[in-house]
Image (cartoon, rainbow, N blue to C red; front, side, top):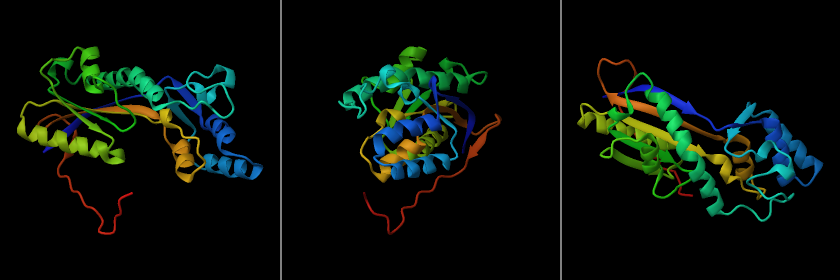
Length: 235
């Protein structure tokens, strides 16, 4: 067995009220008072008061946008290349902040033996794992693994990997860092999926330290079970 010893989190600097994001979405998605009324109803019943983003645009005036074009329809719309540039510029520092909080008073950065990065909202070269290593000046022989584009269950997959590592390495100190910058991927097409994602998701990072079962207090990882429903369909 293994244990989650500590958890650290980090959020980007821009905090947007849900009502401000709603106003932004209303301009893009709604073409009538009826559509605006429905959108506001969904936002008001989301249970969310505020969200964080690496982008300032969701609470700024049109003239002050930095990511989107200063046009009502956002055209020309940000390309994937632009989105990944913003990802590369923000993901590393956010990850390092979460890791430092996670290991504070637990282990030193030199004690980290394995690093697992998790993200489904971006990729960069040479890679988030190497960028974290460089910024934190981690040991060059650290074992690195990246879990990319596996969706909502990616963190569980990473925990399963960390558990397996701890079972085979008695002195392992595994850091998992999950970094998602969802607000870079706003889509302007008026579909239920796009409206729902714009309504719910935000940017943030979480890191966990996993160690082999021992005297340290933590959350014990006993067993992992996977099951695919017989009627599940590929999308």
